[in-house]
Image (spheres, rainbow, N blue to C red):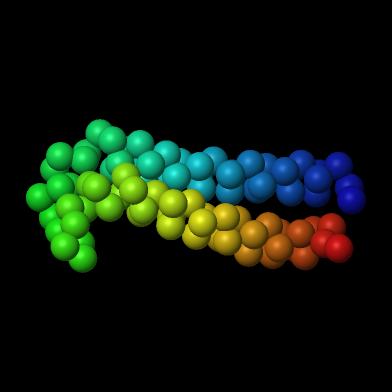
Length: 84
């Protein structure tokens, strides 16, 4: 892989990680801790939404983010011809 292509590959990879980790932090910390009281006024399946984010929602979002990262990196690897 050429030097410029390698830099673009890693720049894109880091961009993906920053975006996905920001979403994870938003859901885990902001929704699950800081905004728990306002979110508790909304019910989801009989449970307050703030409680749901703190107990289950953050885990579901994290698993989804792992799958999204896998898909994005598979496409990026194929684009730069570094896939296995």
